Structure formats: structure tokens, C-alpha cells
Length: 143
Image 1 (cartoon, one colour):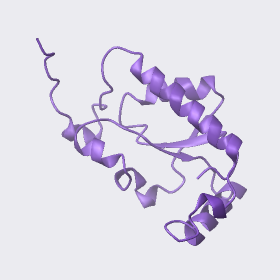
Image 2 (image 1 turned 90 degrees about the horizontal axis):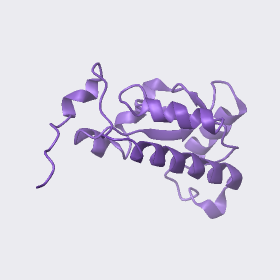
Image 3 (image 1 turned 45 degrees about the vertical axis):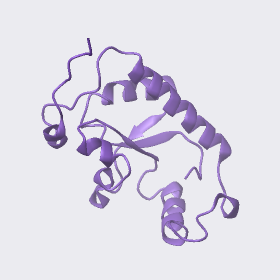
Image 4 (image 1 turned 30 degrees about the vertical axis):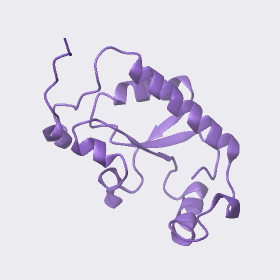
């Protein structure tokens, strides 16, 4: 949820595949800081929607607006998580949204999508990635 300006992002899975390269390039170009996962014990990479792609061998990322431990943004996030996430009050009409942050996030995602789509070849797992075991052999192009 975009509750503050979009200046940093946590990209779960960034160290697992070749997606780290375009992620870093787009983030630098748009002046977005890529932060480490502030809560690695929550293991969100395997608990989120993109994991269906992972299990099928498709490298993917999961994004959150970034915050650093102890920051005001973390306080806002923790309050939202405890009071609104998956609750009746988890409704855009009932909570503050940083519309500029949301728009900047969409610009970031669009630029990243274009960067990934604009290179030859598909994203691939890093050799040392646990998730590489899900990779499928490349298919030959149709005649």
C-alpha cells in the first residue's frame, strides 16, 4: 500500500535471478533506492502471489515500498499491517494513500517491465539460487 512517497523499494527475490540487473539499472535511472528485506524472518518471497510463477520455473520479483528499521515508514507499515491488512478497514476509501507515491511506483514497474522485455532471452535463475531447481529446460521455437 502506498502510504508514503516512493523513494525506495524492497524487491524480494532480487538475489535469485538475472532480474537483479535490470532492477538495479531502472532503480538508478529513476533514483529509487533498492533496500534489503527489513524483515527476512517473514519469508515473504515464498508467501506471496508471484510464488506460483516461481514454482513453474519463472523468475519473478515481489515488491514493497521500502523502509528502514526504526523509521517512521516502518511505524506506518506496522500499524497498517496490524490494524488494516485483510480486515474490513483494508479499503482504499478508508485509509490514506500517497497518490504521488503510487504513480511513481507504477512508473518504476513500467520501466522495469520494458527493460526486461527489451533484451534478448528470458530471465534466468542464478547458478546458486535455491529456486533454480524449478527451472524448466528451454523449449525449441515452433516451426
